Length: 77
Image 1 (cartoon, rainbow, N blue to C red):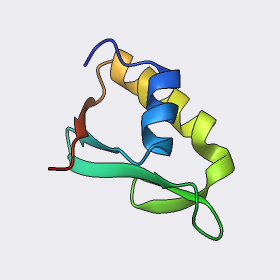
Image 2 (cartoon, one colour):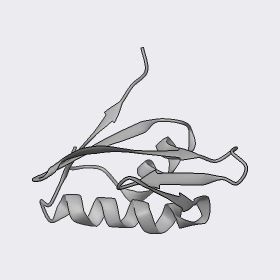
Image 3 (cartoon, rainbow, N blue to C red):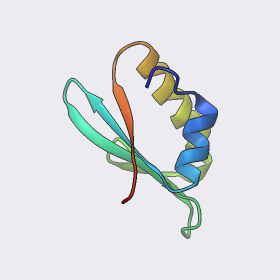
């Protein structure tokens, strides 16, 4: 998924898609809950305010481009 960009990550997470991230130490999922009260994004096993979406998406894309992780979208059946 080398063509992943920040806008796509933000859009797809906001639309309810899950992103699976694989690192040398394992794997975890990233997802957003923009309509929760309060809105949140889940990243690296932690819950963050939804306002952190831009920062988290930027970090994911930068880490992927450096080869520190691999990503794949998890599609619901």
